[in-house]
Length: 307
Ligand code: BMA
Image (cartoon, rainbow, N blue to C red; front, side, top):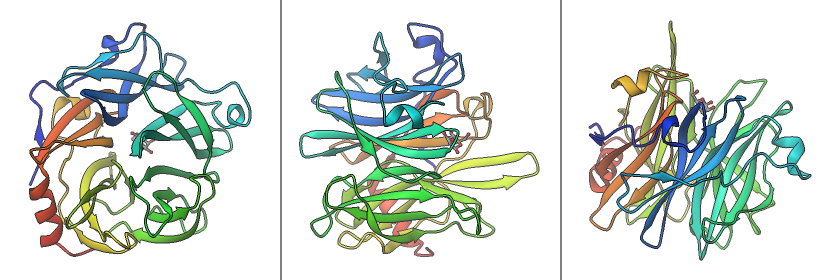
């Protein structure tokens, strides 16, 4: 099964922004009232990234705001850790608040910041929520057993592992009780490293997770997307995991950019009719959209329980 690419791709390019920027990719996505929101990673001409909202009424045609939503902070404790930019945001709505987990890129390694907004006009930093060498944090929209939950992707130095872990928190700031959930699969499209993509979506069959997987080749790394289903009550348990990638570099956008052979997602929106819109960065250059029936994705995960 392959996701259906939107035939108007790319949906956002650097040229759509009101001032010169290098690239726009790896956006977080949310629905706020009737509006579709993309919180894009925009790489500026100095090579550092900021987060920039673009809005749409139909989920396909987006207009960027006049100014970025968040630029690297000049205030401590954030300034020290955001000096090389802020990247790859994910948005999770918990009650009335949209939480944004994003990568802080710095000379000490990368770590994860948490911000919030209630209106996509004003944004407030909440805290730094990981040690260095961690990224791809997605919050679950519901508490699990009375605690907030998240997936993350620590990068271990000694064993060189790149797995998806789960941890829990009483307050969204202090995290613990960490366990490994999903590992790369030797010999497959997701053999080298994996990371959570869009925040998990609650379905009757489990938490649907769209993730990215990486495979190394003689000419570099290939980033593809896959799907997995986690147990609703205990999401450290994998209920199913699709064997095949669901999106892989094929089109010119996926190849022609700063980093070719990359499709990478940070956000997906489930419509009332069961259509899942997956927003993805192509080649670290532009934003694109692909869709699938959520039922088909779940069936694919359950057919292949080879976690
Ligand atoms: C990952 C992240 C993503 C990027 C991808 C491909 O490590 O940095 O932001 O899209 O590499 O370059």
